[in-house]
Length: 248
Image (cartoon, rainbow, N blue to C red; front, side, top):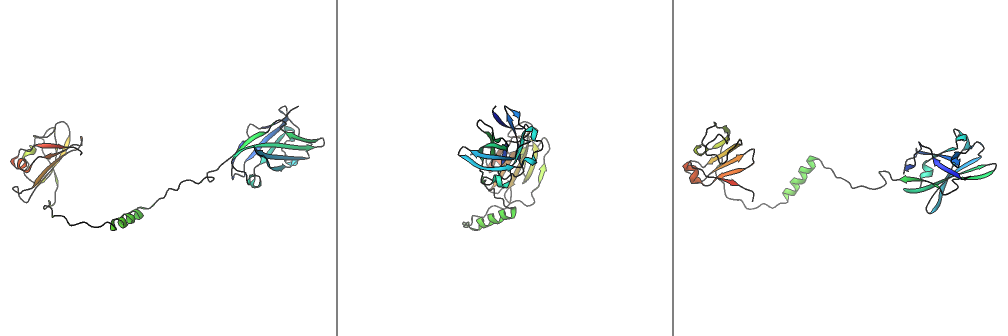
């Protein structure tokens, strides 16, 4: 009869490096019928791989829960796991009794695997910094940038600019006071576009309406389009011709 060696249905067949609590439960049999190990005087579990025999562990026959079931439990303690890298392994069970030595299985061997744990390979380190560290790093980098020449003085800005909501029928070409205004474009007169879009106008003059510089900018909120008046003369004349700004 052929001697067989198989795992029980509930036994693991894989153990991770460093795991010293996992146990394999194997069944020694003859033609897959459990062998009675009651008369066994010694039981040795031997491990090997493609290169040959590696090491062994003994199982006390007195520790068998029920020898008649042919079940042998192999505990992968620290001594057994030492120097065994991840890979595929073979296992045999050698049973000695008054009649001699029985080796299970008689044909080939039963396989199991040892796998890496998460510490077996070094991963890439993700460096984290605090916000204060980030600010310090940016300040240090900024301190190394050479200062350029001072540019020309710009025009006087507006003081206390606030946003004013315009009535529905406002003519946006007739705005004469510097300021910021919001309105519904579909209801306003002389709007550069139509529809249900809401917009905001920034109207800036110099120190007086007759100054050499002035600007007018229209931002639409929903469509995201920007418009700019074409010249100071048309703004002063109340006949603004809007031009849509596009990304360059």
